[in-house]
Length: 289
Image (cartoon, rainbow, N blue to C red; front, side, top):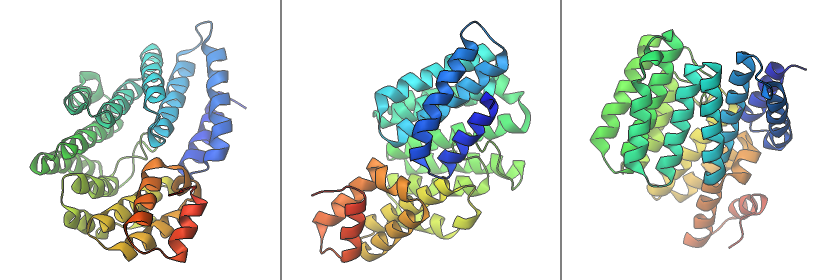
């Protein structure tokens, strides 16, 4: 099986939240990629290995493994530059911006994302380049939201939405953070509005999207998790639990292993009366209070 086909299977595992399978497939893919690039190799092998490290970075970010995430994202950047892949170069910058934001380095995260969005080669990369620029602006908007700047977040998100509208209704760059489209921008608004301090606006954003129309299981599960957070911030406990159970039904492995979701489940266990459904979800997720 070729490296390209292996990557397609690994990406499919990630998109479907089959993380047990991915934990076997992705290290093997990276190991084989290094064999093919060990003596120089073709540019395409560098590009595929860079994409593999980007996929690893996304999984490490999801699991809050920041130190390993930094290493994987930087390795992806080096390989993408060696392979001459501007989309992978700027996507690695986006992942580095995410890691900087999670570390609380908001100014650095904003600078990394916006500098990459203005990369001159990205502007020459056609529709895919425009979509990557939209993803980077979207990331910058999320960073601004984490700083509590609601107006700045909305301005940047509207800019990303404008790019998505110009590109039409299809989803581009499905292997870059789940893709870019008007629908994925609107999904992003849910979490961004929450962090900017307006859960009612987050709920309005959630009601405007069709979960079934999101590009894959991972995106649908993430949307449900963000909606559950919204309900929690609004004090709607039963709706929060119901939505978490829907997220679990959609993608059990995502719900059971993601630290952010487990933290929400833990807080529900200690903040009010529990139900059999909540206790069962906690047990399946390995949450112990």
